[in-house]
Each structure stands twice: as C-alpha cells, then as structure tokens.
Length: 83
Image 1 (cartoon, rainbow, N blue to C red):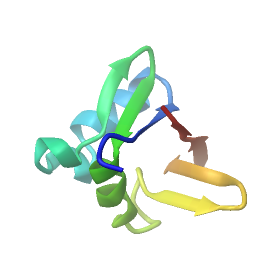
Image 2 (tube, rainbow, N blue to C red):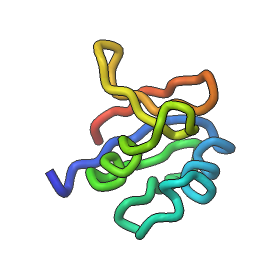
Image 3 (tube, one colour):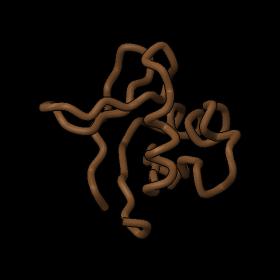
C-alpha cells in the first residue's frame, strides 16, 4: 500500500493551493499532496490518510462513498483515480 498513489485534476490554482497552502501542505513531505503541474495533484497513501483527517468545513477534505473518492474545494468535488 505504501507505493500506491492517487491523482486528481483540480485546475492549476487549486493544485497550487493544495500543495502549498492547505493544512496538509504544512505537514512533513510524505504527508503532503504534490502538485504535478497542469492542474493535477498526487496523493500518496500517507498524504491521503492525512487529508482524511480534515473536517468537511476545510477545503481539501475527502469523501469516499458510492460516488467515489473525491477531494472538495469549496462546493466543487474532484474525483481521485488510482495511479
């Protein structure tokens, strides 16, 4: 599971924010989402676990339900796909 990663396309502005300004961006490197460029972000298994700790009032929180694994920014949800 350690080598697993998930990628999500959120747009360039949101990708930069998730990687540099979100609460998880302030954690140790292995727990941060990574901006891949072109509006895409990669979450390692550890980064995904850290993001699951966010409350739904925080941008960057995750939901995992019948609609899939999604990251939320404002009222917008973006689906993560296993890399």
